[in-house]
Image (cartoon, rainbow, N blue to C red; front, top):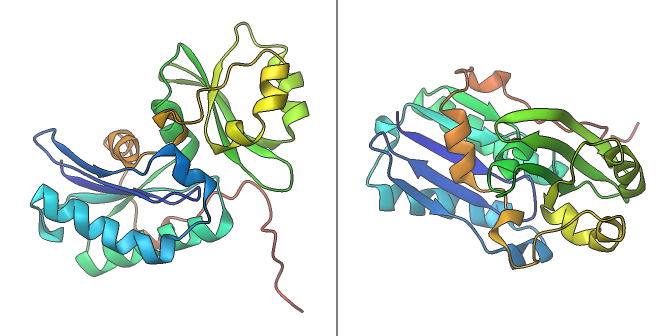
Length: 222
């Protein structure tokens, strides 16, 4: 199976082609990119073109498009999922949805992992994974509430993601280790989106929606 994967759940843009022969062609920004303003509208299509060209594939060669559906930044998710839906519709391909927290967890090298995405408003999007097993499904919480909940965990997880960088002081103060700021573990990589999507179901493009976990910051004007 040959997949095009992308994720825009954080301020960084990631794209990857995972070919049927197992070779991957990825554009994954460094962790330092997470500290800069998002530029998905300008970066995403060039990133997709880059990985497609390096992989030597066209849309006719793809079996599906995989997309990280969040949770994450509202604007980023809208851009990424709208792009994935448009490409899939034009190429008559199915979409495969992947949790952005699951993709983040897949890149953290520890027995017990705590993927954390900055949810703004002083909160985190979090989940808890042990290997391939999701112990806690995604939820939103203030860092202090997350620390309190982790008090009931049987072991101490390794935290990573832009949320862990932002709240490093609170987490480490509670004895929760956080990956170094320059670690690739903080980036939601499209390679992991592709790998997880290999076991996901095909869906019609219009059926794939962002997983915001909570209401958007901006409300429509009445």
